[in-house]
Length: 102
Length: 417
Image (cartoon, rainbow over all chains, first blue to last red; front, side, top):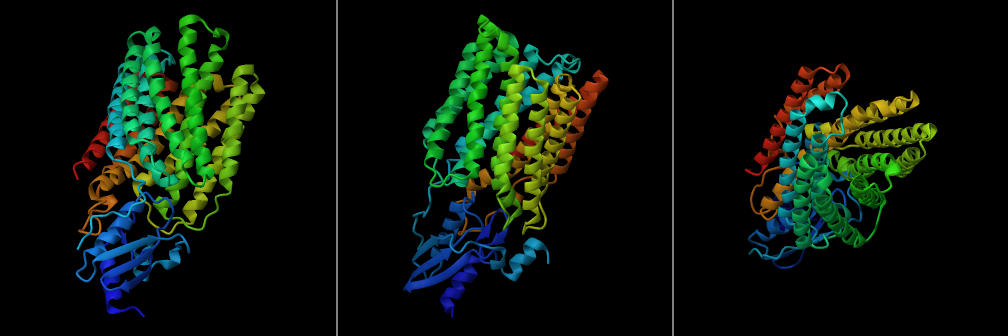
């Protein structure tokens, strides 16, 4: 179960867009896990659609800035993983609609 | 509280470096097209090897295409191969030396070709510096893959191309190895186009096609066959230049065709597996360039079979440079430049405020007229070669020059966003 804070972080992350696809990182299915290991600290586990994405650094730091910009969070730790690899099934219905038009 | 520590893999290149190359390249592109326009009367009568045409060809191939490729590689190699550029400072020096070399080389070729040796050596030094930079960078790559093989072989072809180019200048000056001059000349052209540019475009297409179409779950196995077929084709062609054996030339053009068709089919398979339904226009133009390349390879093979390759080599090479290499570069540049500028301007803003999407940064409305101008201009140029009518040539070259200026405008406009 996601707590209110985890949900709020997730909602906030919907403002971070992949500039090439023009879809936010949540609907694209890049966010694997949001954890609050201690008060005012967030730990984000995420992936990218492909290793060697040219927007690698920008998206990762964008997520960090976004979460750290929240009042409730002082420190955000963003970890990138390739396991399990991203697949199109991870996109939300909204994400699929934006990319595929249905 | 925002902590100003960027958690970064440190792979991004200082944008000023690739931009220096790209801006230089646009000036060289316009200059080369003006030179061709002013010397068209020689060109359509089949006199390709004239100082002014040499100058324009090198401005186009070295000043534009090579400089663009270098600039793009400074940006793409770190991200595609997860390796940091060995030395950015060395990169700026490499840019300065290469730019100086190309400007003086093109000028010497135009005014006094026999004095092209020293400018040629400066260009050679610049390109060698680039090769050192890439060798040191790719060496740090953790896991080499098939892309490394394509890009590595392309870089090796570039090394051979410039070595042969310098040998040609020495041969012309001193008569050294003059009996092989023709074979060296043909090999120089073949390795510079088919070896360097095509292998490089193949390699990066394997990264960019899935990225721009968000293709997923495709196989990379055919890439090995593309590599083997194409490389065999290159070797057979070089063998045919040195032995004068027609059968080797037919087999060579056949293997190049086989490699290119395998690549075309492989790209189609990737596109079929895409998640992104609607592909954007510049990317479609890069895909169109692949179709053009397939037709050009087929034409070369048929021409070779009919013993007509030596007669048609000029127009075929011209088409290869424009409709395959230049169209690919233009299509991808349309995507790369906004990305570079976006990274430069917005990579520190993302997550803090709303930032533009990449497609908002390049004028897509101008893409279709621009691509039509390039295509119609190229078709008319080829027509003018066959019917040898100057008015058609001038109309065609004016269309291409207009397209080039419009393209430079579109690129420059990105930098104002």
